[in-house]
Length: 245
Ligand code: SAM
Image (cartoon, rainbow, N blue to C red; front, top):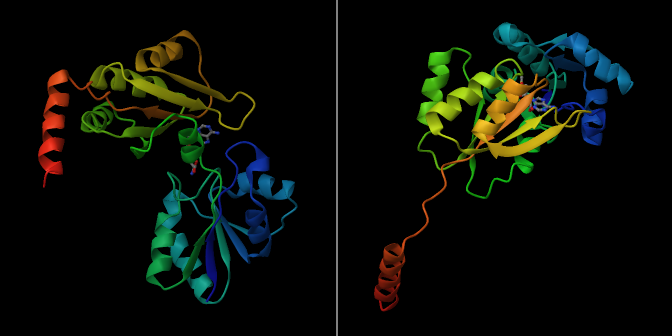
């Protein structure tokens, strides 16, 4: 039985591919790629000539059957997407799920992802985050999703495309209020831009200038209220009572 490798590819800068990814892509029998023409350019750049087969969202079900068959016959397969880590707002889940069920070894490689790259520069603390991927394109559904995070204590992370980022920011501002937020645009590319600001400022920027590229948006939770003198008094009483136990 073969092995299924999940291989991240760069999100812009080609230097971000790992040595292990290059070795695996060169060694496997087959690479399943979201868009074979797109990935061909990447593989040509690294002089990798492994055979490619397409594996995209609309054909995940049928293609995964075929790929599982090939894995069971002993072929090693690498799964890649157009950019970043497969399965993270990208095709992959169906094949990976079936591989686990079939007892096939799944080997995920660490590597580039817009999610972790953006988060590492967003200033989130150890309190955790909630990743929601792409918000729905339909206004009603998007607003419902945003309403559901109103009371969350976590920083919430969205992926967004340039033509919908203003809708997301406008709805978030309206529903959540003027929270602290962060955007990472065109990560690892020539026009990379990071900005920490309130939602109103980021939204205004989308209105003042044509913002291009791909975005990761992080919306921080409402700030905890400052403890009052009374709260502190209560805490001290609690400590005194409990330390006597
Ligand atoms: N699987 C990918 C990953 O691990 O990063 C994400 C794929 S998803 C289809 C594409 C979205 O990821 C974009 O719309 C954008 O929100 C985000 N993204 C990808 N590359 C990016 C980059 N260079 N800068 C900022 N965001 C990026």
